[in-house]
Image 1 (cartoon, rainbow, N blue to C red):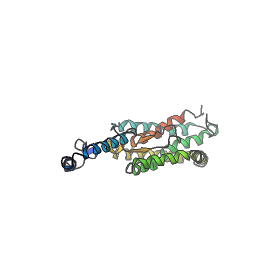
Image 2 (image 1 turned 30 degrees about the vertical axis):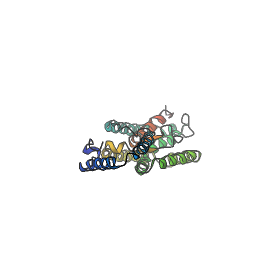
Image 3 (image 1 turned 90 degrees about the vertical axis):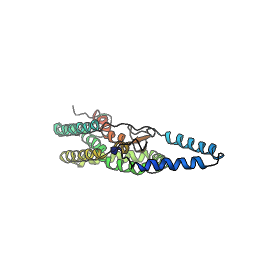
Image 4 (image 1 turned 135 degrees about the vertical axis):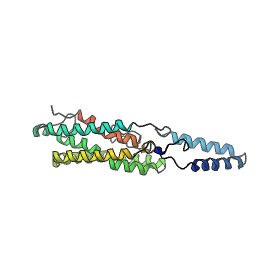
Length: 231
């Protein structure tokens, strides 16, 4: 696998996979025969455990341009929604939530604002054993009710206190930063990921890659856009 990587995918020096291959072959041919069955069982168990989590055994080819285009569509739509709505429309109750339209728009923006934290956490968890991520997701799932309260109050407060102009500026700057960050990613880094608390959001899955995280804010945005009652 390391030998077939390109430079864009973070290929190590060619000597690295050669050294790794030799390091594996030498013990394989020098160990006593009695150790082969036990070693095979350990290897098999490791492979099964590694493949239990989704997306760990495949390297998805991510269309970064499509993600960029979705970011720009959401940015333009967000600006248009705020520019075109009257104060009365923004104070109107949204469909299916306890927020008014302005508070719901801030919640839609929040999906982009939290991306820096989500991406940073994914980088950390990807370096830790799988059980750490699963335990973390379990703890967060157990705290769903307090999260729901904080989630509601945060969007209520933000949508009440933050001006339209500030929301537009925050959206523009945040999405611009996400564009730059996505440009620095390669297919290998986009395939990293961690378990997520599925009770926190309908778009959170048991395991999400960094590529999934880049798609999340637009999915979140489009879902809640249907709940606006501006017309």
